[in-house]
Amino acid sequence: MSAKKIIVAIDSFKGCLTSVEANQAAAQGVLARMPEAQVVQVPVSDGGEGWLESWGQVHDSGQNQATCPRDSEIVEVNVKDPLMRPIVAQYLVKGDTAVIEIAKASGLTLLKPEERDPMVATSYGTGQLIVDAVRKGCKHIIVGLGGSATSDCGIGMLEAIDHAKLIIDNDVRFTIATDVTNPLCSENGAAFVFAPQKGATPEMVEALDARAKRFAEASTEHLGRDCQNMPGAGAAGGMGYAFLQYLHAECRSGIDLLLDTIHFDDLLQDANLVITGEGSADRQTLMGKLPFGILQRAQKHGIPVMLIAGRLADEQQLLDAGFSRLACINPPGLPLEIAMQPETAKENIRKTVRI
Image 1 (cartoon, helix red, strand yellow):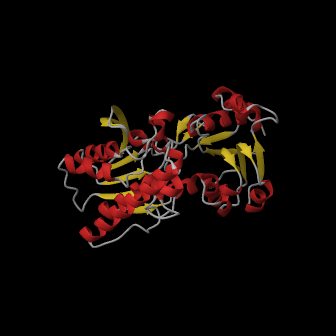
Image 2 (cartoon, rainbow, N blue to C red):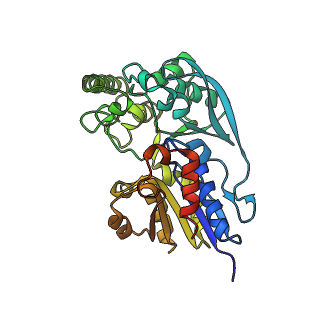
Image 3 (spheres, helix red, strand yellow):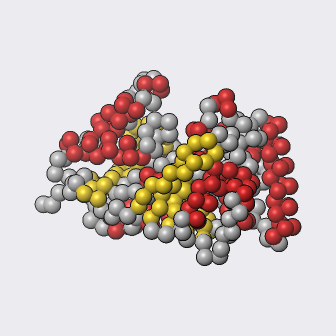
């Protein structure tokens, strides 16, 4: 009988583990019980944290080699952070394609909690990354929209492109990756839904939404087209809108775009099990979140999917959706501050997946 092939594709545990770290811990747990198993680690992201890492290698622990070629490089650029302070941010280049994670230049994690202010935070640094990529000859810019500190409708990004006097030709195309379908304005828009977690008070939310409406009206009058209600326009504090309205971007589901690019369905062909997971799993997992995207792919091939999480709720709904097994990595009563320690989380993942 041939060795089992197990695919590990776990989302980041926000504030605790990256996708790569969670995958490695799970692979170690599997191999501790089944040394002969072939464990394929697939770093994943839906466009937010870990987006760049996800476009790197797919690691095969069974054969100790990569199943995807090493044809990418990380480019470092001096840019401005959300408060216009100088930092170094990275993007990835594969051939004539650039992969940008906006959180690297315009992310919430770049600010201390007391510094969060979406009234002033700018996406200027993301624009600088785009300028560098286009000037280096990249023809396809793939942008992961997630984890932003901004609610500026992408105005800062557009200003950076304008200040660089960069003319983006029609032969440069943009794809934005997000599972956010919110419009730009109103109660379901960028300000009302996302700005509070970036430090906005109720008064700020009203002001940000009004600012977004004025920008959209002026943009429509200037360009003769209106993208404010397109799915994804409200992503990343309205940066999605700027991409759609001004750069004619195509909007794709982040997880579907990634899985298509790494030929995930091919990896599934002879797999016996998929292990996926996230920090907190509940009924919202079934609303387009990353583990559900993994589940849908695996179901087409009849492959069982195990779901692990730091917090687990709505178990019956998750099982009814098709997950074959659910497991909370944390033992009952474990204090949150201990559970969130990276080494604790890694060890708990290793113990959980020793199947």
